[in-house]
Image 1 (cartoon, rainbow, N blue to C red):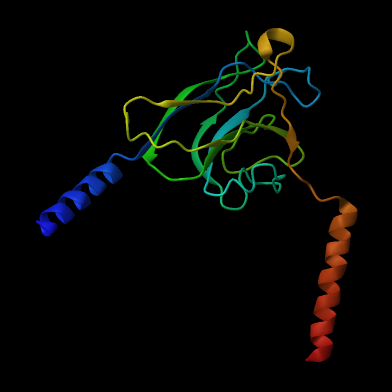
Image 2 (image 1 turned 90 degrees about the vertical axis):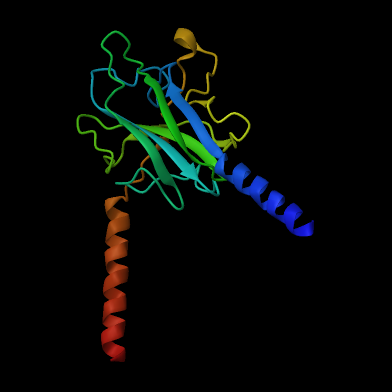
Length: 199
């Protein structure tokens, strides 16, 4: 009897684990403006990259990125949309609904949209440009209804001008200043000389 109960318990646990999914419909339909809070993201055309990001810790959500990267720390790209935001009729841009599904992982989801001028590339970020970071949300286990996706909206929907289109590209890719680079170079030279003297 005990063996039977143990088998049933294990079977139920395995079924629950098999049905544990993250099923997500992510989008940004309300538009975005640049860091001045006024200029549409796609004013004058250009290229954009929208990235769906997963992080088990969420610790790097509010951290400036290093130039040349879309992610930092333990972040993983779960999906990307390259240059689909351009719409001559709507320069504020939008991200049409994208579907994403995989086995459940506890952690956090957020999104970033990069204004990359004229060279959109999901593997690089032009130094010095601004990017928008969507809200951070905890991952949801879709065990109860894996067919129905949860919705993730990149837009925070801050009330403001032009139909809530006030989601600002709110962070900047960090670029070391020439003086900083010079100090780094001097530090490296000092270490090299010290190592040589010790040897």
